[in-house]
Length: 122
Image (tube, rainbow, N blue to C red):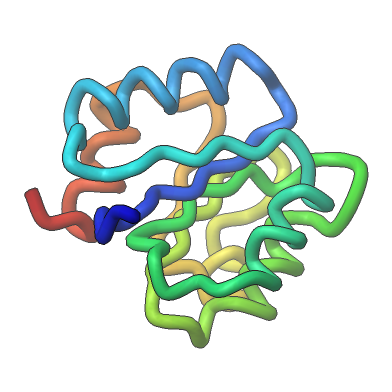
C-alpha cells in the first residue's frame, strides 16, 4: 500500500494522454499517474475515494459520459485542484465552473508544466 498522491488525467485522444503521462513522469516522478480516456471512466473514478488525488487534469469533451466542465462543477469543491483543457470551451466558462486553471488546446509541454507546477509539491 502506498501513500503517494495521484495525478488523475483524462483525454479521449490517445496521443494527448500519452504525452501528458510522459510529461508527468519526467517532471513529477513522486506522484502516481492515472489516465482515463472517457468522461464515464473519469466519473466512475471520482465517485470513489478521492483522498489520494493531488490534481485532476481533464479534457472537456471525452465521450462517452459527462463533459469535463460538468465534472468540474460537481467536484470542484473537493480538496484537489482541477485544470480543464479545451479547444471549444471558453476559459471564462471553465473558471466559473470551478476549475483552478484552464489550458487552451492545443498546448505545448511548457504551457502544461506552467499550469501544473503551482499545484504540486515536489
